[in-house]
Image 1 (spheres, helix red, strand yellow):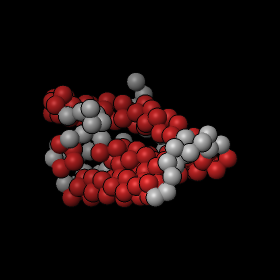
Image 2 (cartoon, one colour; image 1 turned 60 degrees about the vertical axis):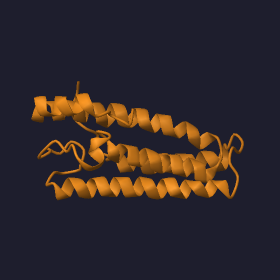
Image 3 (cartoon, one colour; image 1 turned 90 degrees about the vertical axis):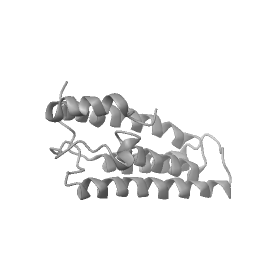
Length: 152
């Protein structure tokens, strides 16, 4: 498997996904599934996603490792949000997209979320896991065995 990661970082993919979601909601809404005031719940998801992503990034830096995908990690982070998932930063981006879809309240933006998840999975997560296995061997494999990739 190729372990070279794309040049565009994951938040760039999220921004493109948000733009596509906005365009789909505006021009191809496919109906409305959520009305105001319930659509404002999307803000809660967006804020939670930003908080998780920023908190995870700050936690990486606090422990002295680089949060940039593909950058040589200094250690296997297994505490904080990384106790529950190996990818809290990718979950944060996905949570922001879910919040955006809720805020828009139309069906078509919902189709973007699984495409984003698959893209991140194949373009980043699988490649990063191979790198981590090369860099940390058994320590990473043990962490991988006990901590889910997403939340399941």
